[in-house]
Length: 258
Image 1 (tube, rainbow, N blue to C red):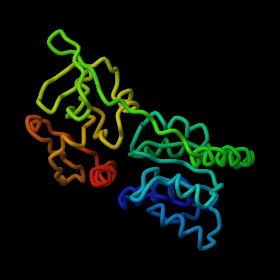
Image 2: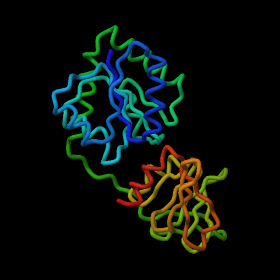
Image 3: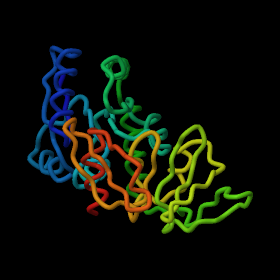
Image 4: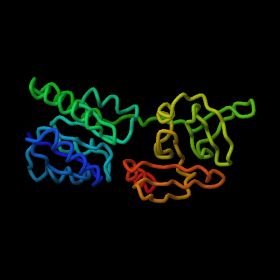
């Protein structure tokens, strides 16, 4: 059995290699491949298709789906991601499984067990489903429409705020909207996941479980000793400390520099 790893974070790649080798001691582990370009070059060399791929979704130069479309990958895939986003739910139906980072060893074991059940029964049905998913992703689609204004409660009024005037959303029992002027509004959203569905991902970044920040509210960021990033906000919101996990650090850098 051959397993191809696709992961652009060296530390995570080493940890994943160690976990897979412990759970599948007889497997030949290939990679890691670290980018869309790397994946395409690898298969262009005529490398044999692995039995299983464990792939990060967000890579340094794009998403792994782009590479899978280009090379026509048919191998079963276990996806990994730092995001628990609503769109990922669809992929769980068409892939072997998906794992949230940091990867839990027990969840990886269950995903590998699921793969072996697929392999024992034949993976032709899975391959057909996966090819259909890739074809759908490669087809032209209508660009999603994101909200340009958000509303919140302030001084017994409902106020609408253009996205350009939003500094960040913060979850603290309720979901609060903080403006670039430092005003605090209570929104009617129940979760940040719900907000992510309607907020433009080019403008907003989910820094952690509590905070969704706007690009224009960021003054800069500072690396921490634990490989996390401390995001520095512009005044008057600079008192808030926003930490980005080490798993999301490279994604944040790519986002803010894009």
